[in-house]
Image 1: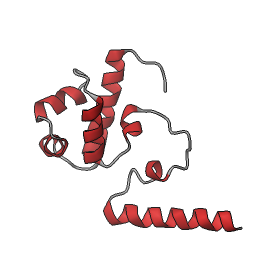
Image 2 (image 1 turned 180 degrees about the horizontal axis):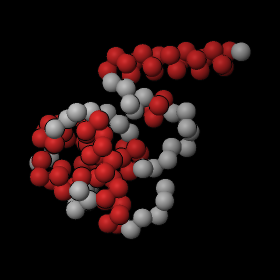
Image 3 (image 1 turned 90 degrees about the vertical axis):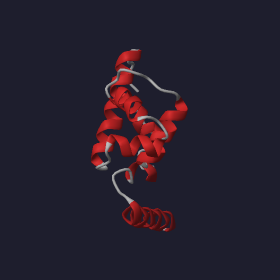
Length: 111
């Protein structure tokens, strides 16, 4: 993870939340409801105006169905992590991709 000051860290984290929210086609109000925070607070987080607790980051990651590490821009040690690969998929697509990757992994281990 690149070294950022507090303000830049909040801006980058907020940007990732915003981009993921819009990618999922969630309104700010919908995501705020799912995460249990106000839409005003979510706006302030997305704009980098406010930081938030680890708990709120976990709630946002859960609501967006992404890894906390993604929102915080923390590189995963294992680049073939299934969770990271599935980040852009939803519902049954994610389940199918996970199954395919697990089967491929098992096949590679067998041969």
